[in-house]
Amino acid sequence: MKNNNVEEKFIQGRKNGLLILLLTILLYALALTGIITGGICFENGAASSHMITLFIISVIYAVLGWIPLCGLKILKPQEALVLTLFGKYIGTLKGDGFYFVNPFCSGVNPASRTKLNQSGDVKGTSGISNGQDITNKKLSLKIMTLNNSRQKINDCLGNPIEIGIAVTWRIVDTAKAVFNVDNYKEFLSLQCDSALRNIVRLYPYDAAPDVDTTGDGVADEGSLRGSSEVVAARIREEIQNRVNEAGIEIIEARITYLAYAPEIAAVMLQRQQASAIIDARKMIVDGAVGMVEMALERLSENHTVELDEERKAAMVSNLLVVLCGNHDAQPIVNSGSLY
View 1 (spheres, rainbow, N blue to C red):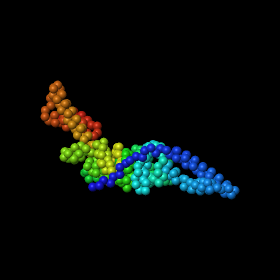
View 2: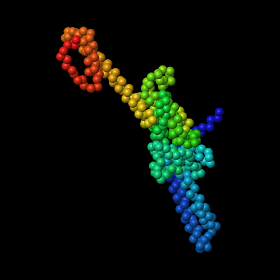
View 3: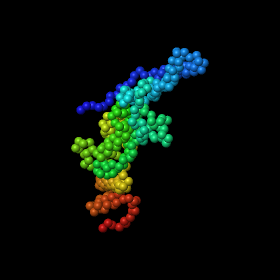
View 4: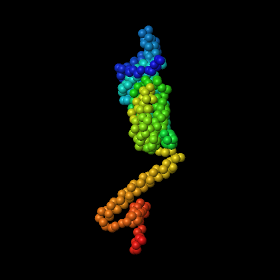
């Protein structure tokens, strides 16, 4: 199959914009002088053939001399300009400087009017973003952060959750970004949404038994809440595989928001509270049993008191009630015999 990808090529040695600007101004001054001189000669009736020729050339230059100014391009650090000539890609300008190129070249940036919720590209109220017009055809090579809106996704157990990510990215191939996709900003945003869904559905919100999140056939303890670094790394890798053809490098992906969906949040909170209470009770009971065993062993070793099985049972019951109860014990003094 034929490869239709456009290879990036750089335009070198064009940083002579200042020279062209000064030359154009000088020629305009000469043309203006020629027009004024020719006008005076015509008025006095002393115009020679050479003067007429000079006057005509000066007028023509005054009308068309501005065309070279269209080839002047100014680039700031970390900016690039993709140029085409009558529809054909001729190269990319990179690096700060004052350039002069073919005046009939035009810059191409299909995403110039697309404003995403990201740093360095936030939509302004008057059509101006960071002091630049939205029709600017220059591509920013700076590192930018895309904050996609929160999504409601079902985890591997079917529980609806809300999750948001921040993706740090930059353009590394201007030709691919401009010509391989229709709009590289929208393309990146959509691929982030798709990759996020594909990865999140592999994990439970909390660690759950009998769940394989790595694909090796063995259950593990992976979860969105407990393995956020691993999940973020897989999301970054998934997005990178999808945007390679757009000339974009994904530097980092981070989870910025994670919570159960509102419709089940209250129920899941009760579930977590119940689990915490059970774990706490188990710890209390284990500790209480250990303390009772220790008390019985110490009494038996020191022969402090001889207890038959019934008295041991009563003592164990009383100690467990005291140690496992939610409230302070209310002691009852027994002055009589147990029998």
